[in-house]
Image (cartoon, rainbow over all chains, first blue to last red; front, side, top):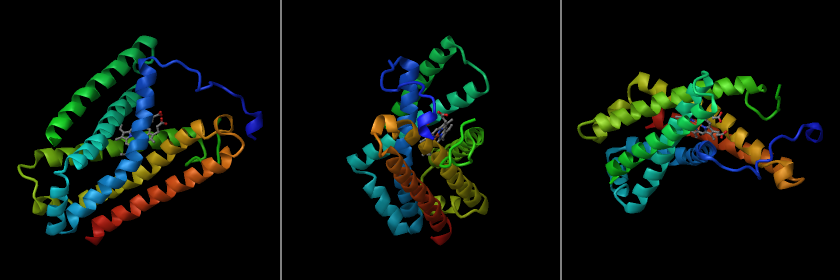
Length: 124
Length: 122
Ligand code: HEM
């Protein structure tokens, strides 16, 4: 089956302008979240099991390493969501021109950066 | 039309829509939880526990987990069918890709079951 299928873009040789970087980052953040959800569920479990496990979780989350991990997951979630919303807007036919694509990528990166920094400030 | 036996809905259009609907559910859930955490005057165990003991919140959370299952199945399918290909990985790509896909689905299924345990078991 695969032998007869047309070969389209060779993704190994394409250059990367901002919209392409914004797009691959959406993909990378999606894969990070796939793993990150495991950490989030573990936290949800610990936070709801008992008062003791809740307190233990809260003190675990004080360590710099834990904060870094949480910030990483939250950053992936923020970026993936903002880029995802951009996707949904473009799916409705808005901003599908070259200029629109470039503006959308800039907005995505800009808004996410601000939110990710705010999230970092809140965590620390 | 793109058809593949390992996609979720056997049709690209159906998968595309599922991924979007599930994205909206996930977004709503994360915004709701984020608002709960940021909006609480002080995040205590008693308050947090009460948030998740309501039936509506449990249904919403389960819906988010099921959406995650669909969303990430389609999402990880897109990723592996782009990179784990014969062109990039050589002749054993199919075996590799199927293995990774099976692992993804098992992980996602475990997330759903784990979530049910957290919501109704604690
Ligand atoms: C935390 C759970 C989530 C996980 C594990 C996840 C994972 C993924 C993955 C792996 C992809 C495939 C990326 C690609 O094909 O390049 C994807 C695509 C997508 N995600 Fe998520 N995602 C999550 C939450 C969200 C949220 C909250 C939104 C909100 C808008 C969202 C919107 C999207 C959209 C629109 C796509 C389609 C992109 C495309 O067609 O290329 N996702 N997601």
